Length: 288
Image (cartoon, rainbow, N blue to C red; front, top):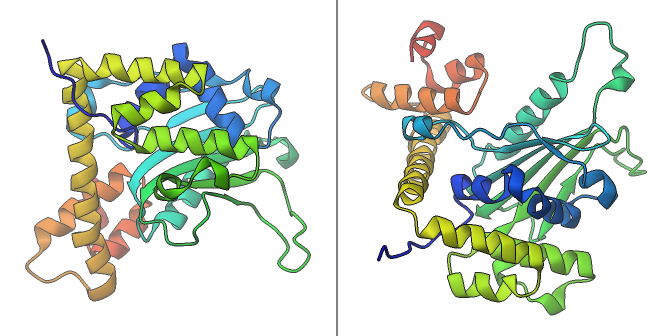
């Protein structure tokens, strides 16, 4: 009998297999209800916009396997999970939000018709801005806290914090549900997931999906492929990109420059930014 392997939903492939598929839209809805201040009936009408996995390409180091969706009121939501917090993540998530917002522009359209856009970022470890479980960033007037516009929301959820919190520390039932979901996503312990699944029917459904994945050699290969990609990307950023910004990339590290530029291209960085950070020419970057 095939021995199950341990899964954590911090792996973006596993996360999307559970939350980003049509048959589990009720699971995704339940998670979103704990995060967003939006009526449940609006979330219930969500439409998944990218349901394809392109599994045959996963071994070729695709970029982020995020979950894109549209709510009943036209709001766009992008959900991404990251094992580690990187120093450039605030700029990166704002860039992805701006791309999503910009894609809503149609020629001759009134700007007021642009859709609301929300990014949700689940961070495995290293978030250092504060010790909150759930951060919601919007555009406010500095002194009065009056919102300028309601069309920007960036949520950051701290999985590391969730591991340490107890249910009794939650201020209300919504926060308690969110905490349970984050613990469920963070852990790689099947017994912990089983215990959490006993508190919710939709969480039990998600756990059943994971159990099926754990018994599949093919799913294990795809899971491991994404884990390797994440480790390689983290290494590339820390050893190439970050050192290049702080100290300058040494003369003999041309290959590191190429690897850094390649990873930045996969993450959809602007080509001028890649040039600035690596010192490579536009021609060299375009050839990658």
